[in-house]
Every structure is written in C-alpha cells, then in structure tokens.
Image (cartoon, rainbow, N blue to C red; front, side, top):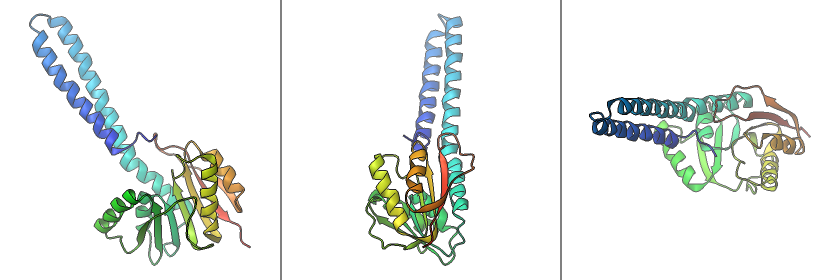
Length: 228
C-alpha cells in the first residue's frame, strides 16, 4: 500500500486541524479549575498537532517532489532520446516521459478511470499529441511483437500474483524490439522482477543505483532485450 499520496497528506493536515481545535476548547473549559494539568495536557496536544503537520508535509513532499525524482531516475535509466516509440505502464510516468519526446510517441496503458484523468492532465499540459492512453491488461497486450523501442513500468505489478507478474513482464518483453530497453521500478517484488526479467530473453539486468525517497523505495531495474 502506498501511503505517500496527496490524500494521505491532506488527512494528516485535517487531523492537525481537529487536534488544535480540540486543544483550544479543552484549555478554555479546564484552565480556570485545573490550570496546571490543563496547561500540561494542552502543550502535549500542541506537540501532537505539530507531529501531524510534519507528517503531512513529509507525505506531501514524497507524493509530489519525491515521485518526480523517481520518475526522472526511471527516464534517465531508459536513456530516452525523444525519438522512440515507448510503452509505459504508469500514467504519471508517461506524462513525465512525454516532456522528453521530440518526434517520438508514448502509449500509456492502465485502468480506464486513471487513463481518463491522465488524458485530461495531458491536455492541460499540452502533451496530448505526444502520449496516448489506452485501457489494457498487462498480462495480455494486443500490440504486435517487437513494436516498441522502450518499455517502462513503475509499481505496475504490486497487486499481481507471481504468475500474473511473470506473464505481464513476458508480455512487455514480447512487444519490445530486439536491442530495446526495458526499465522497471519495483518495490516489495523487485527480486522477483529481476528473476523474471533474467528468464525473459533479456540481458544486462542491473539494478540502477538510486536514492529513492522514503515511501517510494524499491529498485529501478534496467535491462536490454537480446538482439537476434
């Protein structure tokens, strides 16, 4: 489960608001009769409010700046020049990749609801001509063999079983051109991802050295499809 989301950050800020409101009422009601305990407890509640605010700030940073750092590292590992045909299993990553496109094209696959939101965002950013969003099953792609120069995936397999993840990675490799690069960002399942990639007609499977933010973690795995 990914706790580093804007919603989680807002929830922490809301808790801070409710806590400080409760603190004010508590102090007002109890200070006259119990000044010492009321002051001590109120100070503790103020500290708790500060903790909620700090947690909210941290989660917000990871959900925004932190995730952008990860996306940049994934794209750097893919060595994108801007002229490639790219398949991307993550809408936000696809939008980040679109910023690097010149004459290339990105197809992003995922759930319909997420695609709709990403499509609207692409229009807002003026990237609609560089990226297309399509609903697809990772484990059963409809694209021809050797159809993409680069394949990217970020946290795409976390809710899949080992068998489903294996099939999904095999499909990503199938649609990748010989000599093409596959970059996968995986968290809890990264060891299994490496194992599957090594068995899927790929070479140079290497975890890319990276410093990923707390809450996003894992490894970025970069590899290249065997030619011939």
